[in-house]
Length: 100
Image (cartoon, rainbow, N blue to C red; front, side, top):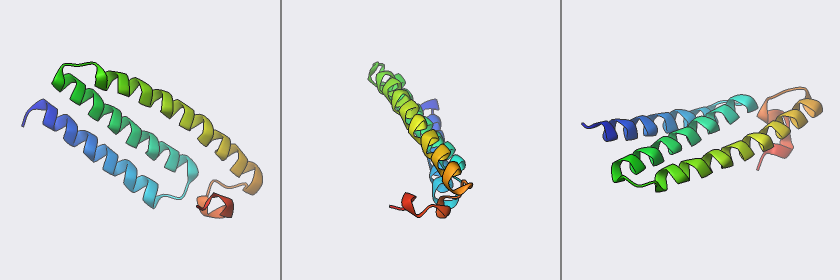
């Protein structure tokens, strides 16, 4: 097993951990953190593929993913503030408007 296979395996493992956290947990902040873990595992996979192929496309894609993650955090924090102001709770089941 070379280092690229190990890093891709690590990316898959962290993505699965983040996905399990999104599915299992009900606290909005924990769900947002798990989504960030999933995004970071995707960034790791892109960087590994870029390092293996010797090109910069994966690194450029990682840069754009970090920009998207920053936008996602801004929207998620606005939802957190709205949810706490309305319901006084971070439980996703407490607000029926968030179900989709």
